[in-house]
Length: 402
Ligand code: PLP
View 1 (cartoon, rainbow, N blue to C red):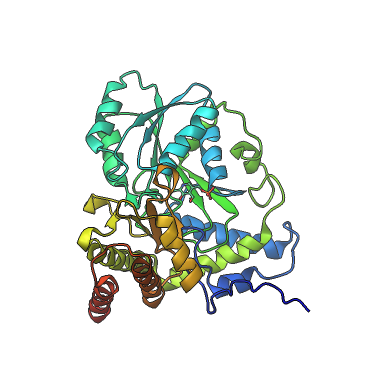
View 2: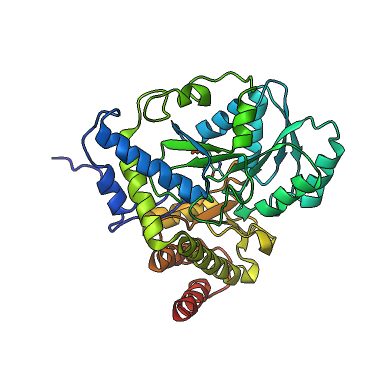
């Protein structure tokens, strides 16, 4: 009898998932979603929908309008642009990396005229250049300023209050549109206080759900702009959505998600949104301390070079020349069952990313950092010693100081 060729054994134990999206899904959210279908006009469901809807608005820190779609974040990008703008409208894209570029690519395909404030991806836009672009636009042709709050590809966060101030200082009436896909429920985000007009969010990152539902929040000013916006849309049309009876969905409502959203908001509010944000800061800083230690001996470096813009939800790490980020990720995955994010667009192969957002604690992060450190050694990548120890010291001090 011939024996079957041996297949590579899967590593045992739970996979440590250190991707920046989708993220870990808490067991209580999985349990909440694991239920039979329910009619989306059933009063029991409407009650759950309404609780979830209100809860997401509290996480967004808004009392204005929320529209949700059965779509990943790309759908909410498209919905936000098409509901607010007309063919040929100019928009200003603030470059931060792959996702700001992709939003601009989408805008151009939709018939908008994106103007980009270009930037080094390791730093993101210079706010003075944003001010100059707005001041130059004396005719107010720019209808919207589009910002990715947290650029998941490069691990940098743009300062939304400073951008709000810049738009105000220029006396510019443009709508302020923000992608909060990898910042919501992870970093400080205040839609109403920062007078953001259009917000793009998704289920699969700080909200800790599976991928598949995204949303736009809109200010009253945005709704007024929507009344005259002429880009074609139907499934995403806020006017069509507002005529729906119980929920805002144009088609079948993804009912299971709402049980998950309800539980996600409960978890976030049980911990306290400020504590959620503080936890993300601790985990982000611990990751950076590990990378700084590894960067010795010409090792891997933090991709973001502006400390004021370090992201607390994802760290992008640049490999030393001649060493593959994907080979490192393969070792972490195949040998240690740790999943890391890859480099996006031009960063493919040279950058890897550690996601530290959502349902994550210190030991989970230390496990991922440990796997990275072992993989650096196994792959012969030059690096300084003591990355995990540096993270551990910092996390211990943080725990001791409460
Ligand atoms: N914007 C940001 C900042 C993202 O991180 C992502 C995805 O990771 C997107 C937009 C696109 O969202 P999706 O992949 O859910 O369509």
